[in-house]
Length: 373
Image (tube, rainbow, N blue to C red; front, side, top):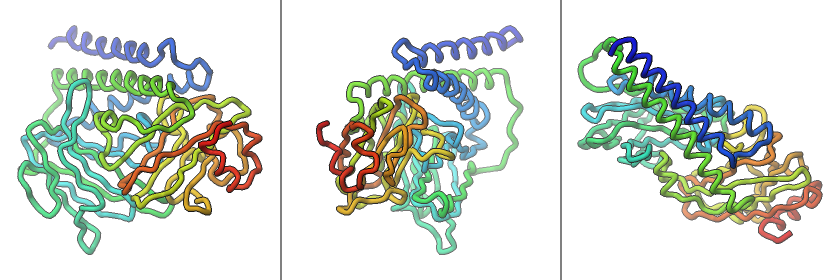
């Protein structure tokens, strides 16, 4: 490939970003200033994430469990309580993950292979319930076609990645796991980069950006058919997008006038590892949880007297301990998760006047969810 070829590869990448912008900023997208400004930022984040995952951490012979979602890189209904990590792997090789368990509540490892249109198919999983940890807190996981070691994560001829989810109950108190992945066999030095390789990586980066810029707004747009309610999501679709099979989702669209509040009631909390309720922006990014409280989990929510949980989504503080702040947004995506729950209890919602909720007792507010206005 000569310089003209390299210029063509770069131009193809830039042109694809225009396509991603067209997919994201469709005629049906909200036109309020906050949503549009965050849409531009979201697209820049997808570009950064695509380049990071497809260029910087893309060598399966020298894998890195890179953190691809954090406080300023968000997409796809990211859980504010979760550390997301991922490494690319070569199915012709075997790998070892070594770690120190820490005290974080939930830890999950999933190997996956790609399908059509960016979809992911799980190959194998190990999580907190099955992970064997030594008395000193260390552990090893073998990634191989044949069973090896006390912690084995299967790979097959099409496996291309391993992903990790570390989920807090209490971010202030828990210590995340320390993890390292390496390819087994003789140590080698990474070869010099080639033009063909970087061109292929740029193509992968642009495909990722276009995929995300299309998929998640498609989902949010579809959720507008049932606004301000939280029905079960299409669980298979969530899995195909790279979800964890231990997680059961509810997803929807919210919109509140300045004088409205949305009451969400979980009638009871079954035995589970944890659960999560969160308010996102239109682009399915979590709010800036460093500064705004817009999500709850099993640890942070204050339960009702009967053991259920009631939350209030509102633009201003109603005086309720489980207030979720919309952070200046008129509308957006919102979701609930059960993680390793023995049953999936459906949440109830009710759109109310803010004055119906503000200053009311927790017992009175809990009676509003599911009731007609």
